[in-house]
Image 1 (cartoon, rainbow, N blue to C red):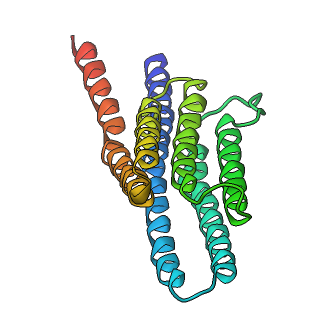
Image 2 (tube, rainbow, N blue to C red):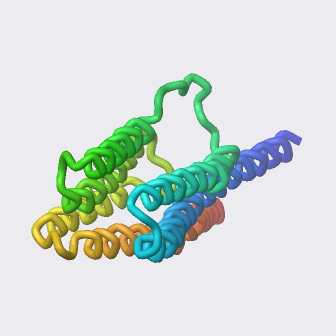
Length: 228
């Protein structure tokens, strides 16, 4: 009787552990999908902005860019909830965690700097050639913020951490190249940031299954020990 109760408890704990691991799998998968989604939103925005540049006057073009930026930002925030926050339902988190997310601080600073840069460009205070450099550096800065935030959390299977740092550094390095080759600035930043974001998302998405594979290998080792 005692052995049966023990087996039931062990099975129950295994189910709870499996649900939590599956949550980590969904979380990593969601991060990959989010970055692919962001790359798609940026691509669509570029397809909308580039034709408008030859049709609309500067003032209307500026309004169109702002509207596209608002729509893209809103879509990204919605995607964050769908792709990342929902998987957290499967993950056990301490109730005491009620602190400001450092990633949000980094991305808020990045967004403010980008908006202020475009305002100063439109008012003629700084040359337009500074825009690609600023956008690239701030996107890299935001990804480094993701790395800082991830580092401050506990380790778990499939945790995305150093990947953010690598992506951020690559985009910032591309920004300095855009500053040196100013005539190709937007092309360089678009290729580096857009392609980097897309490839990052694909990599995270494809490697998400390793979380479940690690769980399977642990179960096999545990079963082997029990047989011994």
